[in-house]
Picture 1: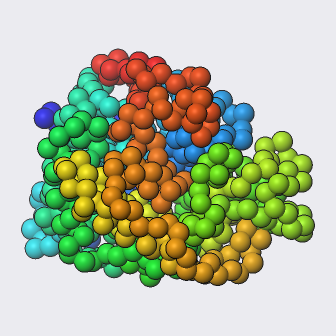
Picture 2: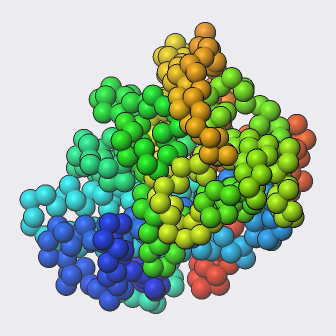
Length: 510
């Protein structure tokens, strides 16, 4: 696999530690001059992590793009770049992809600096520290390859601009091989557990290896990658370091999730607005327009469709946690049949997404921005469902059924939560959802849809299982998406700014 050098992505890059928020400009540093200790490596690694919590990555652009491209939400906006995402007519000029493309490569660049800098160190624990950089590099590339396919694959920091302008796209198969190699190094050298889910662990690396192999298998019957995915998932399950939280609501409560046993890897927002837009806007983007919560609540951008809400069982606790069905708007208590009393053109009379607006913790900006959420990029319930899907594909429906029923059993426990009107409630334990006698692949995919609703994972499921013709048809939850074209729309176009800067890159059909 080719290794390329690249420097253009360093422009404007700064390292911002998630805790102390001290800026250190990386673009002026050379790996052999700056990295003297493992702590220096950690500084670069924190910079790599910070790129992920930027508004241009998970703070809004990528997360909302993934949500819009799925079959679960209506777009309540006329902004063209969002319309393109929602209707799957994304052009290379789309401002959402250009921003998270750059932010992804800034995270990769910081990781590459740490990996290169580690070569000259003699610290006994350097492999454990630099393994975080390998993990983060794999994390970014995994997002990129699933969205764009063939991409520039860069494994070293750069000193030659001319060389940067001659790189070509690396085939997706080679990118996946690099991701797997990075995660294998991370798994071998990271500690079994860490003090916080935002610090990669060996379990996080194994979990991502399971998902990478599951993704690479796609919907190919008898793919050996299903067997490998199951092996990695069961490795984590059998270690016993993670478990399902007894209260589903805790997973979306910024004040409770740090104590949860379920997150395996998370992006940690701390309620501080760092420089370069390192803060979260998912809560307001998905929130009720005119809602009195959080200094004015939401912007009604991504709103569940009526058919999506109807597809959830009202006796399933996850329905209460996932949807806001009432709110205070202008001091008036209303249910979802009257949400448009705010008078805003984008308000919608339908239940909204509740997972991010109810318990955002401290936030540094108005309208619910800059929350303190920890977003689970991988949590134990998803790992169980990865194992279940892989087990079905390898002919072990019995094992798969056990894993799915663990997820459903947690939902039956109920728990304490509060409504959209901030009223404390208790959802009593129930018999819904009942255990399944056996499961198919379709059953596992449906359980993913319910359990992981609005967590920005549905699009990746649709893409890897090639479900577009089904879910974007007239019978889909959003109705027919007339722009859908299965021959081109599973991948997005490379940003035109990248193609213009380097014509050697391959553009995807669009």
